[in-house]
Amino acid sequence: MSIKRNWIGFCTIVKDELKRFLKIWPQTLVSSAVTITLYFVIFSSFTNTNIETLYHISYAEFIAPGLIMMAIIINSYGNVSFSLWNHRFQHSIEEVLVSPLPNSLILLGYTLGGILRGILVGLIVTLIALCFTHLSIHNLGLTLLMVICTSTLFALAGFTNALCADKFDDVLFVPNFVLTPLIYLGGVFYSIYQLPPFWQQISLFNPILYIINAFRYGILGITDVSIPLALGIILGSIVVLMFFNLYLLRKGVGIAT
Image (cartoon, rainbow, N blue to C red; front, top):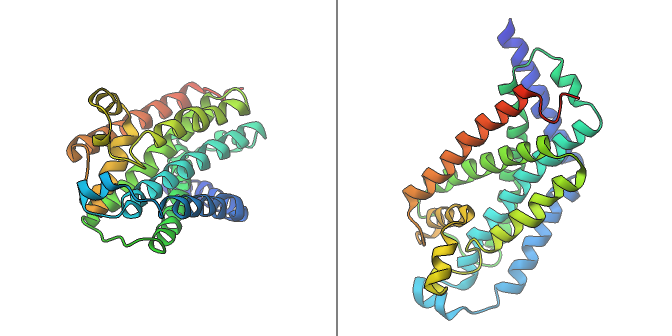
């Protein structure tokens, strides 16, 4: 009986998340598509001779995986952080907390909502990319794994941000001042081999560099980093964030009052 009850509660959270971002689809889906389209319009006409010489592909083809992953990261993160913060602000999270639903399913419900939005936007952006360049899948398994793991990782990160935020500005701080710089410096528009040796070493401390390169390898078969190392960093980060979020829920951080 408890299994059925928990399943109903979990499905309710997921359905609520789906309804929320589909109801405002011009903001949650179309805006990302428009933004990425502008990137392609601007950069697809550029010629980067270093990239073309190094990898024997067009510049538009090189940046496509990075732009797809950028959309997945921003949307999976933003969906959970804004949704959970809004529920905290409106005190509707209290309805979830008084239910017998375990913390693990509460976390999973919000996370799955972020994953679904990230994947949906990723599909839309992929279709847009195909209008500007050709993409052939080098490793389908790795490509799908990276989409799922990346959307999971940043949905969990968004959950952490929403719980720890004291005000709405705190929710905006991470995507504006942390995620955006890391994404732009994560090899979306360039290879780290184009950088001086010192900055190549500095770039290796950027976790998003590994995400983008692993995804690019899945599609194009080229990478600047070790794929096993990239997978280890991503999977390890998922485990750490999952247990950290469960700890925050157990302690009532951000939701106890």
